[in-house]
Image 1 (cartoon, rainbow, N blue to C red):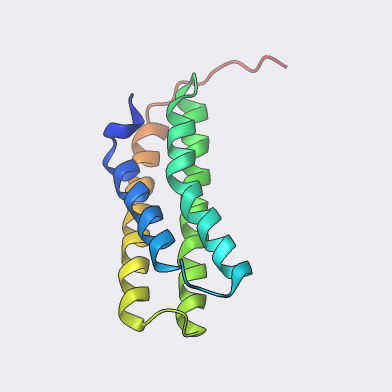
Image 2 (spheres, one colour; image 1 turned 90 degrees about the horizontal axis):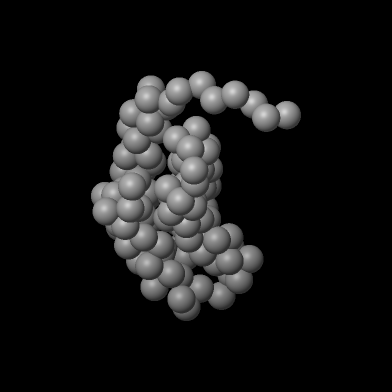
Length: 122
């Protein structure tokens, strides 16, 4: 499957761009770097998983993307508490990140239900 056609990839890609734009002026470089890394990790892991050979591998990378999404929500909540974002900005980004997480959960459930057991080569 071409990952660029997945709605969850499109939404997570746009979210990463929006996060980057929102935090450009932030002077807390540690938090900003962490937020950048986890936001970019979501679409990157979706893409990497889609390029893998097996569905089992793809699902593993979807789980990683979902974990990064949870990290992003937490970082955004912290940014809101630290007053780096207005409540409206934070809530908008958090809402989008949670939507991506729900979409990933649905895709994982669908894909995991279609995984055939593969023999281990160890």
